[in-house]
Structure formats: C-alpha cells, structure tokens
Amino acid sequence: MSIHHEFRSTDPKATARFLEDFFGWITSTWKNDVSEYLVFSDKKEDAAIFGDIDEFPSLPPDPTSVVYFEVTGLKTTLEKAQSAGAKIYRPYKDVGGDVKIAIITAPGGTHLGLWSKD
Image (cartoon, rainbow, N blue to C red; front, side, top):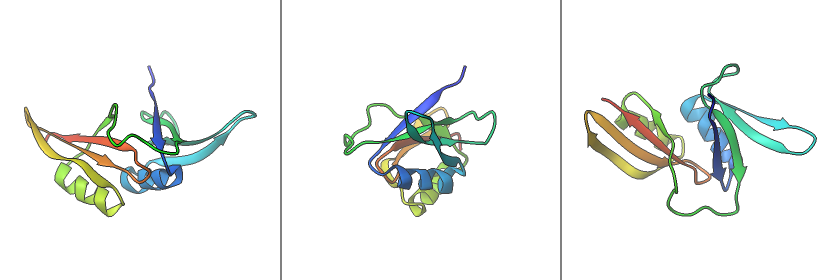
C-alpha cells in the first residue's frame, strides 16, 4: 500500500524549498493534459514518502491533522528546522515511553509533526 500526502500551503514554492533543505526531499513540477502539480518525494524511485503541495489562499491557524516524521535528535532537528525557515507550533514534548514530539510550521503554513526516541 502506498500513501499519497497532500500538503496545503499559501506558498507552495517556499514549502517545496523547505522540504528540500530540511528533509533532503526531491520536488518537481508534474504536468498532464489537465493539471499541473508541485510534487515531492523522499527519493526518485520507490519513494516511501510522496505527494503534492496544493496552493490555498489561507489556512486555518490550527491543523486538522498532522503527519509525523521520525527524526534522530529532536532538539537538534528543531534547531535545523528553524534555521531553514520553520516556526515551532508545538514545542518539544515528552509523551512517555522515551518518545518525544513536536510540530513545526513550514514556510507556507504547512504543519509537520516530528518524533524521536532520544
């Protein structure tokens, strides 16, 4: 089974640059005879993470759902995210069982969850 993620953004190009800089993902424009999409993936073939970034004129201030990505070293990762242009939406939090979480807001308003076991 594959899962396609659709991120909403007020600035898809800024969100794409962030995904490239922060996660090292690949972004590109995909066109067919009907539509054009700004797409992302974690690698060129057999991607585990892929989807598109859709432009919206505005976004709700709070996310309705959040996709969490596992990282190593959450505190360091949050510093890297801020350096790449993200804002901290939900700060670092210990949720028990050695699991730590946080939510960032990427440029363009996309909320991304981060978690680690360190």
